[in-house]
Length: 354
Image: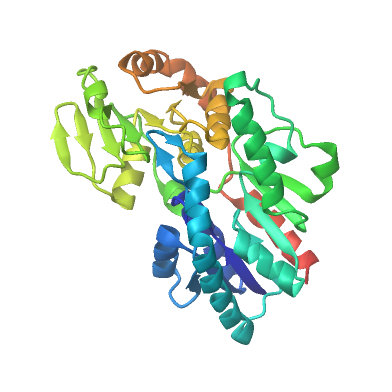
């Protein structure tokens, strides 16, 4: 089949998991073209040369450690006219030489609109749709209610009326009845490199930070000199006693993730999913005003896989480390057969739209 695959450019989580599915689709003999932007485009273009078109994506703006709704809207409005022009030219190029039979979107809008223009079916594959299509099993505090309402509205509006929604998740939830027929929950997408890694219980904690303007992180971790921390996200190679800053290295990160004692991160879905797959306890500190991150962190805590905190402090990290044995016990029961469930369900859906 001819398939157009849309990947958003914000962050690299969408790109790394989409890379797994795109590679599988190519192995199955499908002709796949990809549209993406920003860092995701760079990664995917390097992996699949000649198959990836660069479009203009929208970006999230941060203010301190929280998502700034007003700055994000302003940035989007300023970039929208240019983005639409560039994307129109790219899609016109696609129309001349490539007509997809199906569009797969990992929460990416322009490929979805292109599908609607051509009247071809859309298959949604992402973790975000769980916010609106499932019954949540955690109590949402009043402080998160506005973020939840915004997230639920945006998720519903993002890819409406797709042929089917495949929701990747490390936590099972009951689907809302009206969505159940066109929705399937599948295990999180796990990179082959993670599947090939051999987990071991090391002595260090792996730290990953995307909002790198938390300038006091090193000082906070230095308050626990008996514990070693290996920190990714600042893209530096520095030694600060018990805190080691690591430069970007995908292979190095995977190796240290597999050999870590535990993981300290925000609420990002991809890393949390990989940590759970490798049975690594997670200390999750979601970025404020990002409900999806709050939900991931809340589910980690609910299932006993780790803890959720509002801020990184020495006291919070110490409290997490003191309870590692019980998190390890809870994680020992988590089982996942790689990506086979997702591959099988996607194959069925593609066969249905032929």
